[in-house]
Length: 225
Image (tube, rainbow, N blue to C red; front, side, top):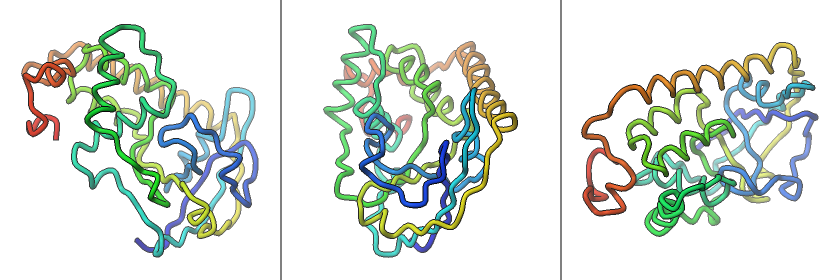
């Protein structure tokens, strides 16, 4: 992997990222989260009450250990496992708790040895999709579709100081709340509407999580690969 231009949405200008200031309860644990898309970074920088900045960086990744989750087997299930391990997901039924335990038992992935992790992004509002799969309301295929509804793209997570040191700040562009918060809200609302439509469509022959737990579908089944 060569040099990349990355963006980080934040309420403030971040010239020198610090892992010590990064939150732990995020998709891939503690890390500095970026995207290749400036417009998405501007959306993520804004809240209902304030705007922010899309910080732009140049990352020299040539000497970094890089893990791209798209390259691992059962990428979606491994990503889902990382989410339930690192994020706070409300598990209100025994089935959901059993599903979480099963995912951790079969699809845990040690990402601690890597400087940079590339993988799907999930906004907080998307965890209804995750909970629906854990509760056997939607199939694996429906989950795969749902998690792409908001077109959030991939995120680049700098996990180590070595990765932070390879990052060069190039500037920051303001993101106006009046412009970018409505775009962020509309993206979430469109995804929620599409998800409700997805629920109306029966997925005959689809794989539910309980099919995997109870052994009716093997891990080598093409429908979950």
